[in-house]
Length: 523
Picture 1 (cartoon, rainbow, N blue to C red):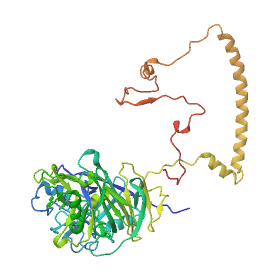
Picture 2 (cartoon, rainbow, N blue to C red):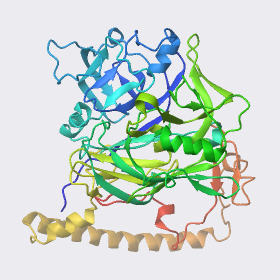
Picture 3 (cartoon, rainbow, N blue to C red):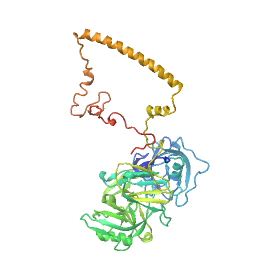
């Protein structure tokens, strides 16, 4: 029998309510007791967990409530009765480019089933001049991640594997959807088509080591015309997937972004200082591109970016209120044009790329897998072991509920009979035989008495008892079509009654709950 392994942990990525009463988008985790909810995004090459306190060291112009939203909350050590300040940092220190920090240990809550006690957390003591490129609370998922190592050492996950779908962040409710960060596996429901597995690569300009080769970028115009902005000028380029990076991607101005402007007949020079930091803004009165865009990965999937994830309203944080404000009069093309001193930088594929793509990284095997994403609310988690193999058998004490029923008595009796009859069993048989004889005598006596009683009662038959109509009559009076609602007289809810006669052919699932053998997993 294969060794059972722990079930993956899924953390939603969505709008997290912060201490200032506003929301920020990220993975919702909590620190301390009582828990302080914070919005995190993964970071590299960060190995520790980086949070911000009352001084968020934000960009210029954000000093109050707006700074709290910008950072994804604020951690208040003195408000937690489980925080400790160790004399020595239990984890190696992250060097440049990260800020100086002070370390606390505290309860780190992932969800209702999983917490890490006395987990080391680094609180920033300075700015680290990353402006809006890495503004959020940082969940370190580097090659020596203390977070992943603690989960694996505690048998909370099977491997140092993480995967991510950022969700949809379009300008209207129909184009918005929560994402998910999965630890120890991936969400099978949110991937589409074949997955392509590649080796992690240590290359300059890519802190995550998740490097792909982009063979083409195609613009899909609403009239059905498809135009490439890569192949006319070259054979493609390498790109680094950075799941917390703002926007969709960075793209060299010469030749690719320049070609984008030519084929869309626009000139875009302004940039956003909002959440999709330094991406491009259309000028007032300029019609934005209205089509989709596909990013073709060499030897991999074609990732189609819908227009709702390519051109969005500019979103900024109001410092006085801390609210995120969407300006629908300013169209934000979520591409950062690389030019001047940055013109030769490696292209980055940011968090909004993971609205249309799904990525999984296995730090144990040194590999990653990329799929086209399938945006859905359905969840179907699959575990992955250290070698990259999918896991189908999970431990019964894992974080997923595993149903089981007590072993049936008949099974135990069958096992016992194989050892022969004991003296106690023989004595039991004798006693049982005597009891059976007594029952037979009683039945004969009762039948003789019943025959006499029937003869006496034939001239005065009793009235049939039907039950109290005041209890059931009105309650079910309107349930004649098999499916109507009726107010519950006790709890005030409105259940739906589905009438069905129980017969010998009634499916067992209508009578009892489903049954599972021990160790069996539910699909």
